[in-house]
Length: 83
Image (cartoon, rainbow, N blue to C red):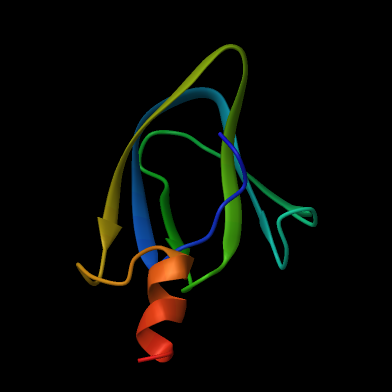
């Protein structure tokens, strides 16, 4: 997965092995690392950069919940602001 940002998001980790998320202020600046395990709940602010990763033999099984159904991607948010 590539680092990305989008609408506010809550993520519930159902299961994980050797998995983590990195987050931070920019696509190429993700200094905070959170190791993942079943039951972990994450919250990402709108447009917060993050990426899910896992090591050899690892995996992440998650449910992603968005607080809105439109303007989820950054380009949609920008287009709405320009209307």
